[in-house]
Length: 241
Image 1: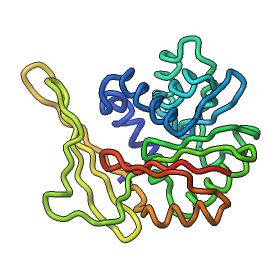
Image 2 (image 1 turned 180 degrees about the vertical axis):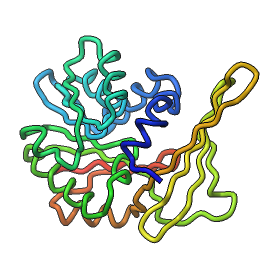
Image 3 (image 1 turned 90 degrees about the vertical axis):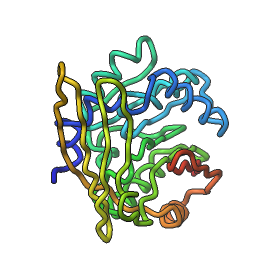
Image 4 (image 1 turned 90 degrees about the horizontal axis):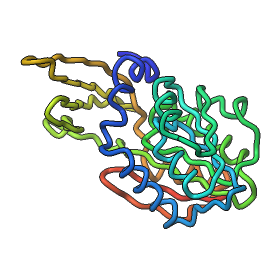
């Protein structure tokens, strides 16, 4: 077992963008999602991307006219974002999103925390504190977009094995091991090296967050739930302050 930051540094960051398919297609997908929920900039509005990864949401928001601040723990993924952002108004910061109030200054028109970032936090208390910080950072009427995978319902037997992606040279699969409050995710990555395959492996924990629990915490924090959708096993929530 290792923590999330070490897991990404040692294993997942190298393959993170590849997991999602063509980069521009993912950016376009996120852009359409934002437009559908009326997340539109005007060249002056600001957006904060928490757990930005290699920049799917950050670049989509910049394309829509936002000045974006992007935060992630992984220096490798932030370096990839820096290479891809071109002339976009994106400022990238390395840091722990649990310390966001020390990393940035309010206010923001939009805050996003997507790509299953919330379950990467260590405890439900961390999630609650982050929601409170987001609420504090938003302008009155500001919007927040969240996405996460609801792992609250336990899978059994072979359903715990999940093929993530594969191509001619790389295979990524994972195995889920359920605990009362979390799921241990065991990632296995096979890469072709000549005529042979090399295996890398690492494990980390994700929180088991139920949709109903997250909605209740958002409402307790002072958010209004504007919309919710489910795509390919992920929940997406649009909320406003």
